[in-house]
Image (cartoon, rainbow, N blue to C red; front, side, top):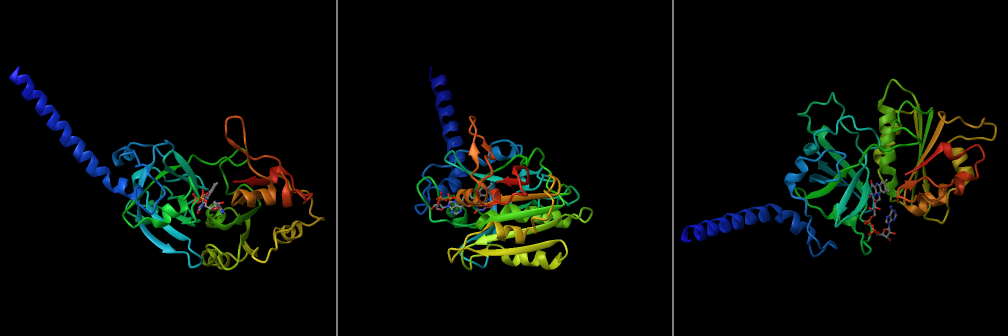
Length: 324
Ligand SMILES: Cc1cc2nc3c(=O)[nH]c(=O)nc-3n(C[C@H](O)[C@H](O)[C@H](O)COP(=O)(O)OP(=O)(O)OC[C@H]3O[C@@H](n4cnc5c(N)ncnc54)[C@H](O)[C@@H]3O)c2cc1C
C-alpha cells in the first residue's frame, strides 16, 4: 500500500514538473497575446514544437519569429521580416505566396512582398528563409486588430502563421510566362501580392511579359513607392507604374483604366492569354472596380459577377480579370 502511494506521489510530482516546463515554454506566446494593449485575450494553444511537424499546407500555424522591422517611410505601415526557416520546404512555392495569421480561431490573409526562395538558394543564405510582410495597423474594430497585432510585435516575438496553398487564378497557379500583358490594380496594402507578382515576372529573363501597375492610395500614404519606383527604373521597357490619389474624392474611371492599361476601342478584344488584370484591396475597393467577391454554398470565395468600372470597358470580360 505504502509503496503504491509512493509511486503515485512520484507520478504526480513528475506530471507537475512536466506541466511547469510546458507552461514556461508557452509563456512568451501567452504573454504576447495577453498584452493589455492587445485585443486578443486567449493564449495561442499551439506549442512551438508542433510547428516543427507541420507541412506548409497543413493548417497548424508556424510560430515564426520576427527578425526585423522597418517603417515603409509613409504612414504607419511597416515591413515585418519573419524567419520562415522552420517551414523548411517553402522553396519554389508559386507566386503569389500567401500566409494567414491565425488568432483565436480567426484568420486574416497577408501577402509576402519578397519572392519565395528558389531551390538553387543556399540553405545558409538567411535571406532565402524569410517572409517580408507589408502590414498596415488599421485602428482595430472588435474581432479585428490583426494588423495592429503584427505591427506591435517586438523583434524576437512570434506570429502564428499558416502558409497558404498555391492560389488558383483561372485554373492555374502560374503567374509568369502566361500572359503578354500583366495589369496590376492595387489599393493600399492590396499592393503587396501584386508587387510579388511584378517581381516574379520581371526577374524571369526568359519570358517577357509587359507589367503595368496602378497603385491607388489616399494622399501621401503610397505604400512601397520607393521599391516600386526602383523596379520601374530597373525595367523601363517592361514595367510601368501609375499612381492614383483618391484623397480629393476623385475615383478611378473606365477612361483612366483604358489609358493606364492601354486598352483602346481599336484594340481587338484581348484573348485570355494576352491580358490579365489582377485586383487586390479592401472589399469596397474590389467591389468598386470589378464587383465584389462572393462566397459559394461551402463558404468558399468565388469571383462573382464582373461589375463596376471594369465592366464598363466593353473589350474586357470576366476571363480577363481576377479578384483577390
Ligand atoms: C488576399 C489578401 C491579402 C492581403 N494582404 C495583406 C497584406 O499584405 N498586408 C496587409 O496589411 N493587409 C493585407 N490584407 C488585409 C488583411 O487581411 C486584413 O484585412 C487587414 O490587416 C485588416 O485587418 P485588421 O484586423 O487589422 O482590421 P480590423 O480591426 O478588422 O478593421 C480595422 C478598420 O480597418 C478597416 N479595414 C480593414 N481591412 C481593410 C483594408 N484591407 N483596407 C482598408 N481598410 C480596411 C476596417 O473597415 C476597420 O474600419 C490582405 C487581404 C487579403 C484578402
